[in-house]
Amino acid sequence: MSNIKDASLAPSGRKKIEWVRSFMPALSKIEEQFEREQPFKGMRIAVSVHLEAKTANLGLVLKKGGAEVYLTGCNPLSTQDDVAAAVAEMGIETFGKYGVSPEEYEDLLAETLACHPHLIVDDGGDLINLLGGRCKEYADQLIGGCEETTTGIHRLKAREREGILPCPMMAVNDAKAKHYYDNKYGTGQSVWTAIMDTTNLIVAGKTVVVAGYGWCGKGTAMRAKGMGANVIITEIDPFKALDATMDGFRIMTMDEAAKYGDIFVTVTGCKDVITEKHFAVMKDQAILCNAGHFDCEVDVAYLRENAVKAEERRKNIIGYTLPDGRTLNVLGEGRLVNLACGMGHPAEIMDMSFSVQALSLKWLAEHKDELETRVYDIPDSIDDEIGRAKLAALGITIDVLTPEQEAYLSGWTAE
Image 1 (cartoon, rainbow, N blue to C red):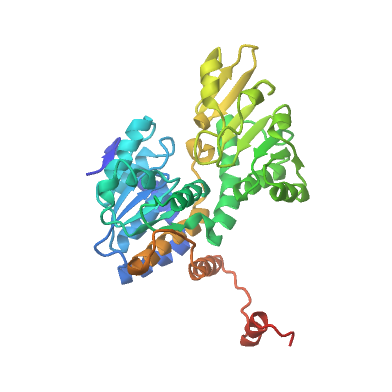
Image 2 (cartoon, rainbow, N blue to C red):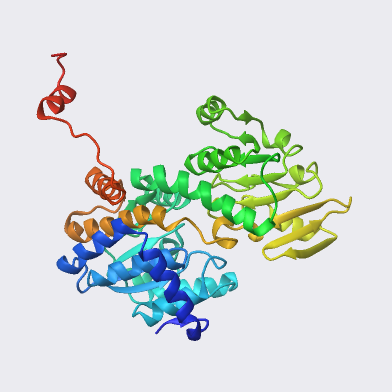
């Protein structure tokens, strides 16, 4: 039985779901295929992704494929209560509430897993963590699952190395249809939409410090530059730093960049990226936010413990006044800013990412008898199918190799 905050909110959530379904054509094609083929007939699928309209659409597509779907969030501040109410009303068992405590959040995940799922969709590794510990008894029917994020895949591979991975997992984030498109263009737009809507401040003319120049960092920096910001990149990888240099950005250590930034965006997937020593030299009224998965990139706990005053200055902005009188503004409690303070990635972006999820689950179901307990890459055939479907939806055609060209590229002669 669903566990949501308020069932009366369903009409608002249903409108959001109907809107995004109009802009997710690749997933709509997959939905038609699933309805015909019923690849998940008799299976239970547990989904832990940011509980908003695009995720609800994924759940509905899986349901059309014959699955019993159990849906929860992956971040207490990204769940939208009206969407949770609507998708529950539409026949999907839903376990999600906005703003719950860490303990309540984990309980909602556990309720979702109590269905003894055959397949899972994870975002950051919370389901896998529980299936390897507190909810181990719920893994008895488990075939495998998919992981959405860079951070989650790092944790999966660490579990694989240590021999404690509960089931085969698909590295969805590493698919071309995911990281080229979602991480760069989705993060780039949604981060700045959230920052601008939350702060009501201009970006042009400000110094923006982006920590991390992976695909998410690239998108964040690119959009900031396009809006007229002076962008500084901090990195630990020499080649990513060189890449950022060639893209026209300044490179500094965070120790140095902390003195100059007006807006800081962490996109590293690591912890302790911005800490006490950086707070000590920041400008008064600097804005800090995180676009990595977990809320440990900016040391918000230090600010809570050491500020002489903490006040909500606007919705989703806490101003921490330090003993010397400077105020540092933290957005979304240091959680994923594009979801804690915004609506997340655009629907057209998640169309591709969730298409990868849907087809990867189908691949797992089809290959369940031959899988090893390890992390699998997404087959090129899935990536290519989604890319071509998206191009077709946009009315774009591309060239196709002739047999002679294919032979030339695969051969060793120059003829």
